[in-house]
Amino acid sequence: MAITDVVVPQLSESVSEATLLTWKKKPGEAVTADEILIEVETDKVVLEVPAPASGVFTEIVRADGSMVVSGEVIARIDTAGKAAAVTASPANTAAAAPAPVAAPVAASAGSAGVASPAAAKILAEKGVAASNVSGSGRDGRITKGDALGASAAPAAAPVKAAPLANPSVPMTQSLDGRPEQRVPMSRLRARVAERLLQSQQDNAILTTFNEVNMQGVIDLRNLYKDKFEKEHGVKLGFMSFFVKAAVAALKRYPVLNASIDGKDIIYHGYFDIGIAVGSPRGLVVPILRNADQLSIAEIEKTIADFGKRASEGKLGIEEMTGGTFSISNGGVFGSMLSTPIINPPQSAILGVHATKERAVVEKGQIVIRPINYLAMSYDHRMIDGREAVLGLVAMKEALEDPQRLLLEI
Image 1 (cartoon, rainbow, N blue to C red):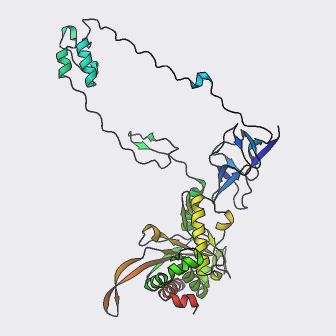
Image 2 (image 1 turned 180 degrees about the horizontal axis):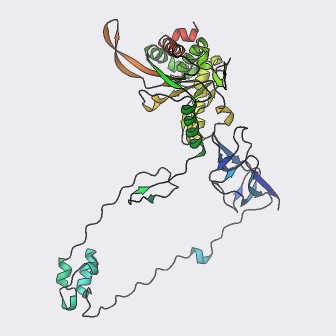
Image 3 (image 1 turned 90 degrees about the vertical axis):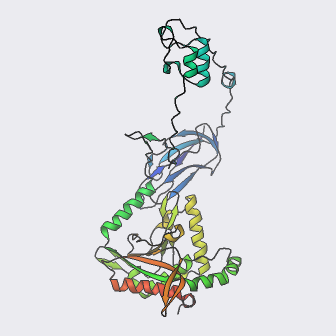
């Protein structure tokens, strides 16, 4: 026997422990090298644990849901063993013979609630229990006439339960008898909750709003989207324009790209933009590094890759660490307006919403324009209202004249 240990992969310095999810193999089963055995959830990402070698999965050291740390042994593989074939014995494969049906016992006359043979047949056809029928015969015996006059109790309407949030967790009954499901909060969800609460407690958050006419961006996108996709292999969306507009504003107002460290303000000489992405396990914010140096195509490709890997739980810890400014796009879900919460230690975040045709006034005339409401939340401890408002106006102006934005003039 040659035993190889399965260990927890190296976690980042900021992550001290993780949670094992569900084992994909059982002891005795064969495994191949690099086959995924289990996933490990940290408060930032979900990591896959592959088999270090081929062999037989012999032992689970740490069960589902266990708290583990980097390098901890969680299972063992026998690299010299062979999986045992499961052979069904005749006792296991033979169909169980049906239990003999007991012959009806003749009821003794003179017993209350006892049906005559003819009455019993009628009650059985109606689905009525003899105990629910009052007999008019001698000593309460149920007669054929009693059976003919008996009716089945109306069936109770089935209670339609709400869809299960987690099918693996059973539904229970609350104190008043209604269904409930108690599901443990994932580490990622718990960490998101902790950070958002911390943000509201530690930051003096204000939000400023503005509206932007998206007609220029829409016209530019419609003009080149087909050629763009053919050339770069990715669709031309709107998020790349918001990223470019944000970077242009951050360059003009550096405090929006800064962060607080104790009693110091750190002004960052780079632009790492966090893009909030929804995933099955919760909100994640992967980072567009050096966004000012990326082309529209590079931004679109990176964001598409973020979305795909977020849905698969394959984003790395290093990809969600850092960031100097964030963008949250609630518009993809139909949001019209919101007040985004700052992602600490950043000092500001841009909220983007759904673009809708609205009636607006231009030169004294009411016209229809595709309008998007922008919201920027900022930490008032370091950012004054002037910089916040002017920064958002700079984003608005860049989006309303995208040619200047792309030419950086």
